[in-house]
Image 1 (tube, rainbow, N blue to C red):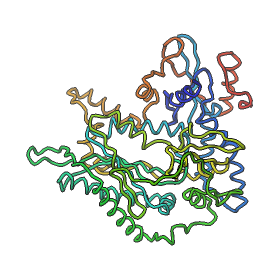
Image 2 (image 1 turned 120 degrees about the vertical axis):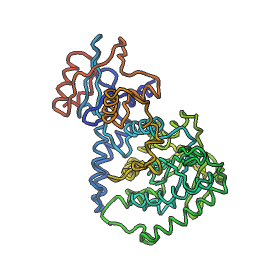
Image 3 (image 1 turned 180 degrees about the horizontal axis):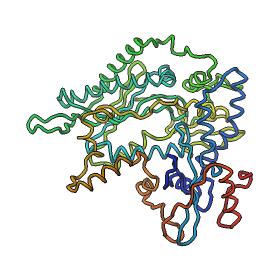
Image 4 (image 1 turned 90 degrees about the vertical axis):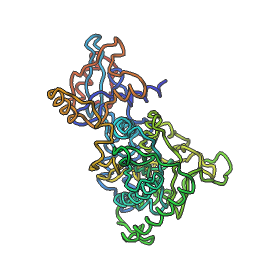
Length: 489
């Protein structure tokens, strides 16, 4: 029951302040930070981790330090909160700020996941079939793409170009226009660097009908395993040729700054090894539950020269719920809270999403090994992890005629039309958590849990000492349980 309330508390939000996501808390204060175990681990390991790097003459970039510092303040009421109050029964609730991190924060990653999924289903994808393409590259190139985000965009463009060529071939429309939404995932199930691409591609193309002269959708014929094998062969050839032209040969993949710790940590994360400490250079200890067995590729999946492509998941035009579920899957955060557990003798057990082919079901990591992997997962600044191509691209001339967000009913009154455009221009691209709670859990979180009235914003308190004074006053007046006293000193 306690874990259920933690999940709900992570998803409750109703207000925005200075573009900050706000999280609804039950009572006056409840410790709802992203993960108590993960937060305690990072808090205790961050300083020793930096000291070990300094002892070896290494450092981490400033953006990594900012990401970790923001994570440690995520959900901390001392950093700021919104004060909500029910006018009928005098119930008080606090709404604390989130870190809005792009790295490993489970709460902020869950918010981003749900927001993206809701926006893609409601405003981006038309009611047409959608196919998922999962493209992976060789292990050495994954290390390279983690260090060079611009190269990841180049390889993705090559893969999508070949996929659209296949779609035009399957529809026999040489001038057809496709569209895709791609998420660049930097992580694997073992919290390792594993840069790969999840692309949701409309299963067909849009083109002008020769009979009616209208711009409509043409469904592609079924794609078989032979088509995927031919497709991954062309993608592998073009990607290797393109990397060679860019000057990134296999001998130059790991040539980096020797003082920067990130290349060192990325290399260890990719290879599944420990970077620092007594076990530096050794493989991570594994927990095996059954004997290894031969791995067979599933249908509509093929590999070539270290590149692999899977195209077996298709969502029909009527299954919008399934499409939203798939969107949440590709936009998920790196770590789910229930997968990390405290082990014996200071170790942490990380359960894999699915067991590996050799029988490995979980990993035993030390505190420093977990910290190494979390730091390596932080993406560099100004590197987009979500990309739109084809008719979904921002500058596509077909965007307004295809996307559901532009399809509105005609309004005859000019004044109403002017007000509608004004409201649309001021609308934020982020979805309120109150709306997401209604969508996912069918729960109205804006209603007071005691009397059923509506909660209203009383004040927004930003940063100490104002936050500490308000929290002490609330506890002193007996309005509810406050945070631990040592946090208010």
